[in-house]
Image 1 (cartoon, rainbow, N blue to C red):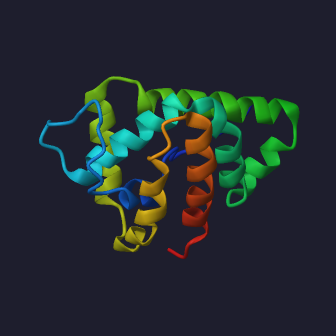
Image 2 (image 1 turned 120 degrees about the vertical axis):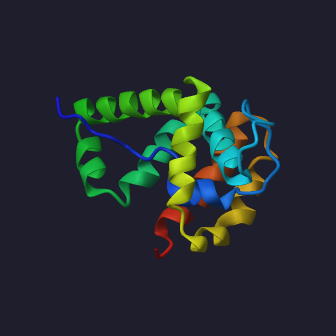
Length: 150
């Protein structure tokens, strides 16, 4: 079995798009930047909403990653990608907090300013408390972010 990484589960632009949102995270009040807080929050939300978000999220990534698209073409590859998604989502959204914050700090440091173009669409999705509604909102915004020129 070939090891396929979906990385980055919550890509750099998606994280930066929610900067300054005031969203609540497990790390709230730790003196972290708003960008890092948003990253932690979004990763926690992806983990919480993993069931409704997994397949459309993977499909969106696959449209821009030929290796994922090819792997999804077989039942074994699709199963492996789903397993990787779940592992990454858990590590990024529910694992020990300090490593998640450090990972977000590194991602945010590499975020281009152009990411701000997606702020409104990304933040609007967080008004949906129910995971299916959140997934239905966030996946198109995520896909639009992936399609944006870098």
